[in-house]
Amino acid sequence: MTKAITREEVKKLIEEAKTAKKEVYSLHEVEELLQVTQRSLYNFIKDGRLRAFKAGREWRVTREALEDFTKGGLK
Image (cartoon, rainbow, N blue to C red; front, top):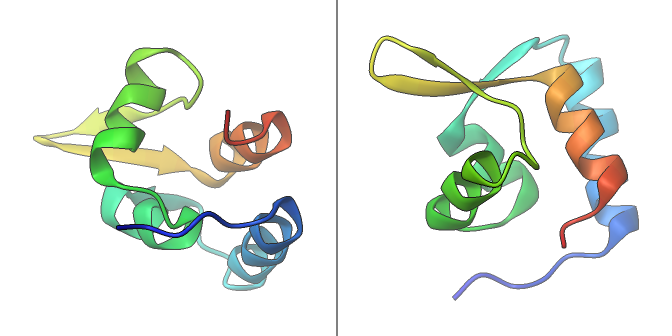
C-alpha cells in the first residue's frame, strides 16, 4: 500500500526534480516521485488531470505537466 504524502513533501520532491534538470519522466519515475500507484497515474491521465504523451509504447510526463499537476493537488 502506498502512503499519502503532504503537499509540502510534493513541493520538495518537485524542487529536487528541478535541480536534476530532467525535462521528461517515465510513469515509473512519476510514480516514485509522487508516491502513488501506476493505476492512479493512468486514472489521472485518463481524467485529464495529468498531461502525458506516449513515446512508442511508454507514457512520458514533462516536468511542466508534473508541476501543473502538483499545483492542482492530488485529488
